[in-house]
Length: 381
Image (cartoon, rainbow, N blue to C red; front, side, top):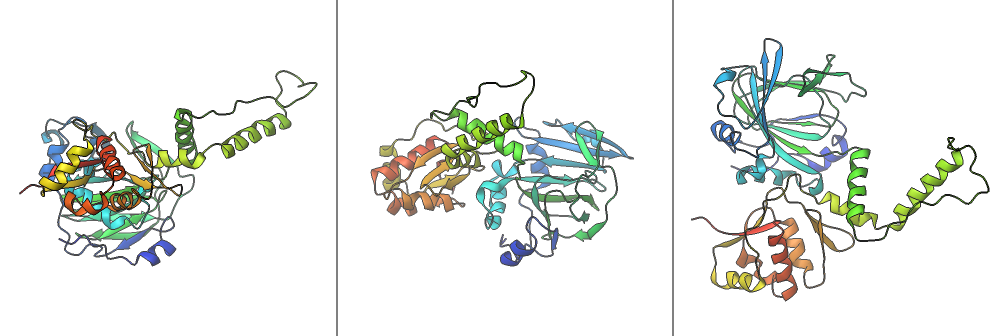
């Protein structure tokens, strides 16, 4: 099956991205499911997998969180199983992200897969992230509206948020396998399964100002660099002890802005942008350069694999960032760094050997494997 995305990317970016919902018929030609419903259901039985079932019982909403033991209690219709970050558990699903790499890697959140029985859905709601929803097996009826500001929401269940008021759909369609919706953050939508069906949601995180600022501030606090401390402006009197003047507020604001200007803010932001959504699996043992060199020579079936969920970025400061860590690059490591940042599909280690001629590049590769950003595995027959 081809995972080539049938989309005019330039037109989409200039007209729709972060602006308008879109329905793309036949976005993936002859789309075949990347996971069977039974496999998805089995995954939700496992500890550490973020999953939930949302059930609509004659207008009464219920939410159950995994891991599950069985699904018999939910009946034959009116419920949806949602499993987050399936791309981190099933390699075939990880490949669904590749067609969307015309967007920045750091924005990628995860691939969530939902299996819905007939009449299953989660109700009309808003998402605070951009999402592409690809229809797998089965069909669903979708309605999507224009972005709503200050929408009124309510919780029919403590773990479920929905729109209180109805919305006017600008997209009202039944999706067939391979069809795709693009829904910008803040646009209301509602999908109801017409039959048992699978949906694949490729989400792109859109942090708000407070979330991003808090993450960057936390990153700055962990850097081993001196940070300025606040000092009052010089004065002969500060006025009433309980009163904060406009001049004092201006002074505090100037302190924050000038301090940030003097810190390596770009470095802190890139550390945050490279952080994976979930902790990456810990490497078993430490890979040494000598061992890597031996693999290249003696193990032609050895693959270099990008760990699902890992973000690999290269900043304008010529530093590679991954999983909240940084590796300064040199002329000896630049080509290898760019190759593995572009890497999505598993590559034979021997194919990358020309980029691993220097000791520096070998050490960088070992560092990234030991940091769980990359892995070396034997190709399965």
